[in-house]
Amino acid sequence: MFFLTLCCSAANAHSVKVTLSNGQVVYLESDNYQSASDMIADVIRLENQIH
Image 1 (cartoon, rainbow, N blue to C red):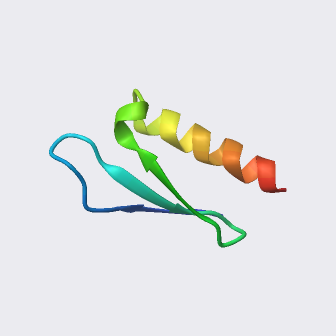
Image 2: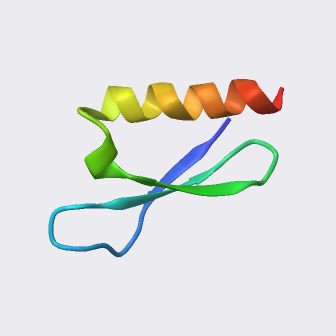
């Protein structure tokens, strides 16, 4: 399981705080993704790397 939290950011870009199941926190930049589903796929990839 992971948690997504929106954080303070610049005008258009949004930093997204992700807490992975092992407690590791990573920040993703929304500008790096075409859609929310692309970001979720990246988070799932990160989760799979730790298991």
